[in-house]
Amino acid sequence: MLNFQNNSLNIDELPRFETVEKYSISVQYLKVLRITYVVFLLILSVALASLFLFSEIYDSVFYVLVGLVIFVYSFLILEIEKGFKNRKYGLREKDILFQKGFLVFKETIVPYKRIQHVEVKQGLLFKAFNIYSLKLFTAGSSLGDLKITGLEEEQIDKIKAQILKLSDIDED
Image (cartoon, rainbow, N blue to C red; front, side, top):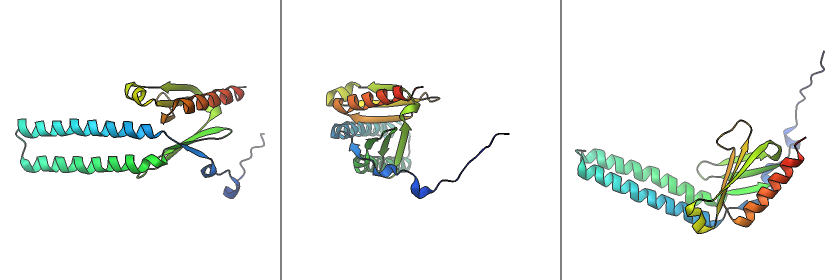
């Protein structure tokens, strides 16, 4: 018979991930986000104006749609503008963490030993602002477990080197 144990842990003795030094995302990424939501708002405005001018929609329905769009868009802009200062990443000995959000706060921690693939991406708009996106994949996930967008070239090189170094060490 196996001697199975499942001991209790004292929550006060667990490591605190809140104390890790965190680094901010490039301010250039905020400019990209602003451009994106302005362009999207213009496209949405043209679509709503076309709907109103070229269809048999009632005025009251149109105003409800416009009000709904303004309401949702206001929350989106609030989340981006106020939450940008919370977009931070941190590196520890055994894992990487990323946090973001204002209205909806999210923090993700990925152990280096679970990382199987690292993807660095720079789209057309990102090239204009010289920023990159880092995506980390672990086993069983095709969408990526962690995506940090808005990193500068120097940051991305250091993070990628750290991840590759530690993920190779942990492979036995």
